[in-house]
Image (cartoon, rainbow, N blue to C red):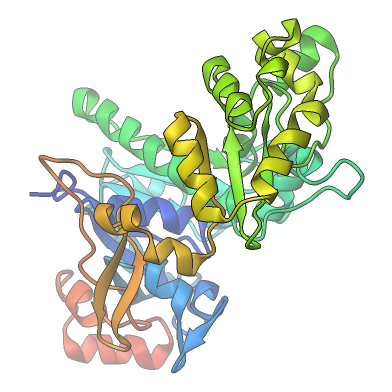
Length: 394
């Protein structure tokens, strides 16, 4: 049985960070009810590519979720949400601070009939502070966290990621925070509010920059594909036009790389004995490595590195990823049967729990597809549901 099969989640959030937290919980058995506006739905439905009118991003992020519609700005919709919250363990929302309170749906009211409710609140900058009311998007967090400043070539502009990186990191952090809160509830019976900004999780994973700046006054700069702590570490082009990445963080691996490319003399230099020393001589180390790789096809390069016990990997596009033997062995990409598109491939659950594995039961569903199922549990029969639909409440 999945480890979260006794957990019920209300996902009121839109786009990515909050929904990805709910997705991870749903992957491991939680019943997730996706609540959307009856007319607008979650904007994620129309983000990115689509097929036959069905958003493909939606199909992945909204997997394992029951889809219902509800206008939370209407008193009738608020009443229904309160009834859903009475039986829920977790509620996830990402409205601007104060919006839920304006709808009379703050935590005090939501938890009045359910003191164990855990409420995850996802915003750009948190629930308080001078930026709390600003619109919050992952791009802003990627800019303000320092990520964009250190990403890119030394003579190029700050570089943003071509994906929702800050949102994804925040989603994973949000799922972890929910589990911490549920663990706390086991001992106390009390739920709580989790205040999660998009800014803080990505800032957390950017390494020791705050400490280095505090203690040494050093501001990390852009250095392309290199790292300030080791070398050689870069991307290199092969004779047949492919790219490979190598990492030599360990001193012994760096020594093997230089032996492989015919420059053991560099490995004998005093500065070579530490990662920081090698990083200061990155140009000197990159030249022979790049030349050796450029003279060989990809297969020979990878074979040479493997034989030498050094670390190298091809730079993959998504077609390469899906065709890779290791990816296939792990079933990191899986096939899900979908009512709208038939068999559809997507990322599998991101880790394997051998005793209580997660699974994907279905892809993202149509707007309001599960209204009858979910609302019938509240005693809302077909006639009342039709009335609520005619009023625009569901």
